[in-house]
Image (cartoon, one colour):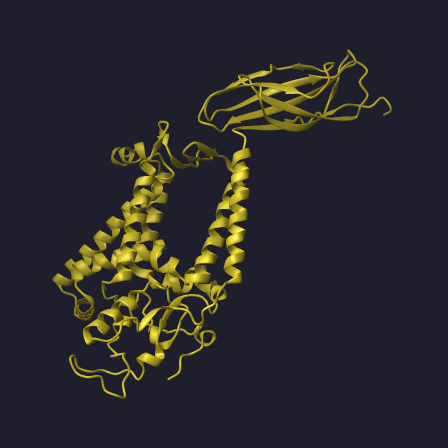
Length: 455
């Protein structure tokens, strides 16, 4: 039987209506996954406990609309930060998908990590795959109720802990657990905690592979990322066929290939597909079928990697990967430049829109400005406020501002023109300088409005 062409099988699907009972599997790719999963889970749990200058190092403060990230504090007007991060992350995913297929899904996706964690609990309580199938097929008994109740209780406990850890990114962890025990958490916070608990429980315990098959957008567009040089989980059709059962320690029948048709590759698959039928969009490139097949090949004394990560053809270069990589580098440079030039002080100038100007009895023209300052740094700072207007303009409201760390401050500034001023609109800048170094911190444009004598 000849190897199917990739473009013929990439949209092939296996429709499975019955529940999927995942067999626990050991092997190289399972060890890699568990190592990565353990590292990511540990990071997920401990990051909220990191402290920087007496505050939580990573915190999304939704009440104050601030993101704390070590020495950086970002506000809603720093939206460009997230634009850069999401675009860079997307192109990184494109590079990985182009070279290695859906390894993100198989090894580091939270859905896969939590699903296999729930399956691990299920295996420890209800037994191996055969025992779980037998348990589900038996009538309801006290033993079955106890096993199912224990399993779901642990699932709910894991979901609750997951939800609390996730919410600790939005509520200071130093007070989160204390407030939870004492009942001081707000109803809004508790409602969101409950929502994430339910989502975790349903996604990892009940939906599982359906999330990857039908809800995850990545699985829907991944096919456009693949080409002949992409490493994908592949069954060696020429070596494996004709598949058929045989006995251990017996010579392989001449009419059979290496595949012993044990179906272990199907039993260990988290999405329940048969990789021997060709690449299917449900495949998450987890490598569990490779581990299972290698184990069987070793028992029969056959060469390993009947199923393996392989490319359809070998290419010296991949133009798309080069383009994506250059784009990532360019975006990273742009992000670094933007971050280095980002001012620690934010100034918003709001002109009194109800009255653009007032003409005084002295013949002067008066403009009123509302200035809003935000200190986005972790240190207090004293600033001097000046303008580029001529000395003939008078400014009242003070020109010295001291801002504490993360402080917001508003002040009203009144600017008066000289007598007999007749320019309709005069552009100028507000200049903020560091009082200690006299260095310009930032400048903001504005306009001075007046009534022309010609009107």
